[in-house]
Structures are given as C-alpha cells and as structure tokens.
Image (cartoon, rainbow, N blue to C red):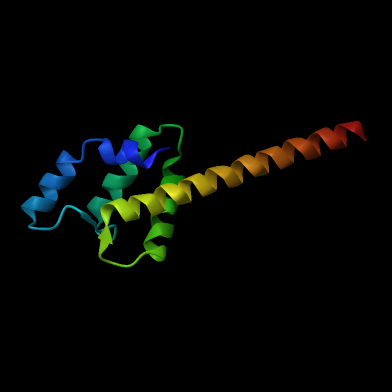
Length: 107
C-alpha cells in the first residue's frame, strides 16, 4: 500500500464536509466518528484484501502514537506504516507455521 495512492485519491467529499463545518481539511480528526469511518472505508476500498478490523486497529494505534492536531499527511503515514507492520507480522507468522508444519511431517 502506498501513501501517495491514498493521498492522490479523491478527498473531495471529506474536504467539502470539513469546509462546511469550517474546519481545516488538512487536519485529520480520527476522534470524530465520521472521520474515523471515512478513513477506514477509503483504505479498505483501495486495498480490498485488507480486513476492516486490521485497518481499524491501525487507525486506533496511530491515534495513540500521535497528538492532535494531526496533519492529514503525517497521520496517514502513521496508519499506513502500522498496516504494513501488521501485514509483515502476519506473513512471518504464516511462514513460521509452514516451517513447523513441514518439520513435523518429517519427524
């Protein structure tokens, strides 16, 4: 998953809603449920192989790692990094499981 793809995707609906609320569209507020859900849906729609729960957990982790105000670009970097870390962990778990299964068959 690439940050540039998410940033270059259409944020028009998000920007319009933020503008209508007289808020800075470059500041991401994941504490607001509609913004949290917007980001989760955007990422899952762009990366359908990702589980929604995985994305939600990555957003929550990023909320703990950053402080408000959260610039959109920086917050998205944190979320994408968290997702990539989670994917790498799962890949390692699957690789380890395959290794142990192969080893058990030999014994």
